[in-house]
Length: 115
Length: 112
Image (cartoon, rainbow over all chains, first blue to last red; front, side):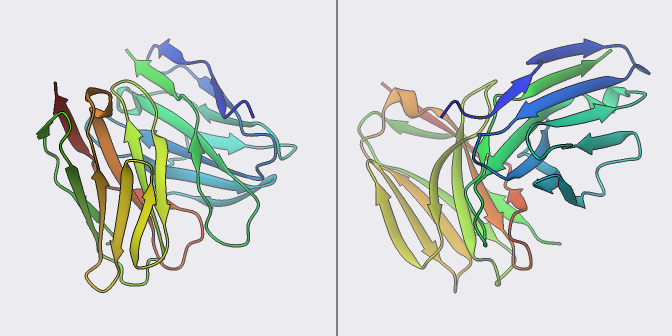
């Protein structure tokens, strides 16, 4: 079990540029989540996939944000026209296929800095 | 608004002592509770999950849940300097099977 992986680990971009992050979940996990964490705060939920279906999207996710999980395996999170307020750690987590709540395991995160 | 509250700390304990971390939550219908440890600059690491009232022990860690009081705690016995980290309480509120709502975390420092 190699755990959740995320790429890149760090991204520095200029305001107005587009960025894309990738998450590879634990192989047998069908649920995938994106969270965002800023300094001094706990992670905040952004969106959730069960297999390839995006089942919920937080109001935190403006129209500039889009997430996909095309084949129910890896997922991408794209931010268009980045703003300085987008600077944060973007965390991906995955969990196993159970009917109810299950434990979520986080990847190492992608730290985004918008200059 | 469904919330998870934690004392931000810092909580400072001497090496070998018991560290007690506390968390309260606002939704009485919540069923699933988790403790994560987060080292500075790193991602959260799952330590414990608890779903039923009472205590759950795993090595030096004990999670305690009291749904009537809407309170969950984490005890760390024989605290080590390597336990120094931020501890995040997370709750899946009633009506969801998956969305974690986190507290802001408590910074624990274990002094040698």
